[in-house]
Length: 260
Image 1 (cartoon, rainbow, N blue to C red):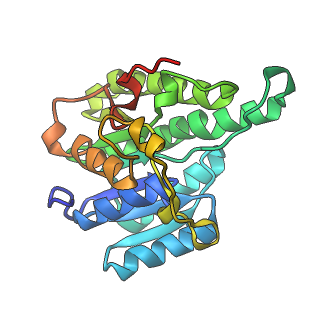
Image 2: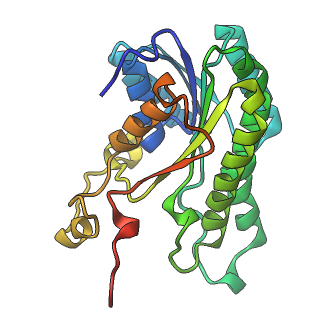
């Protein structure tokens, strides 16, 4: 999976302690990067750090709620103090399983909290990481959105809105930060199975039916490694002519027509 593109580079991954974030952290680490995991779940963060260190990868963990400005300021200050640089920012932290109920039953607090983490968080991280990214020779920012930015299941108002907003924030940042040579792109994952990449208390063995797999033209459900491969490319110098774009990584699920 890994290449040598990230030797000695510093990569900050929010929501990096579990699931897709942890998969990306491992991949960037295997590519030579020094990884900073930021996550609000300290139990998961400790386990993730041990996992990466057991693989002889360079990593640190910093607790952080990305929706809290003070937390984000402290996070970037700690990165600056520890490394003095930042080459790649991956905005992955998000509430993946928010309230899913009827519109007239949804508490406003649930909507606000989801947007605070999934959309306000990436904005805050981008804002406060900017001075460090400006100093990097080939800086890159990556936002992890979702295919739910383009299509919806019923009663997923907050999640879909937050990911749609993050798609728009991606191209706004790409245009705005172009004078600073900072490329900004997004990956929109589809169904990614993260069971084996959770903390121990929530880990499970995936069980996928034939129908689950058949929904995907490639014939299987996605894995964190699939997103990691795309992330390694988009944040590398090999993607130097790509900015303001989103890459859908979903096994073809969103282009398959389904009739009922």
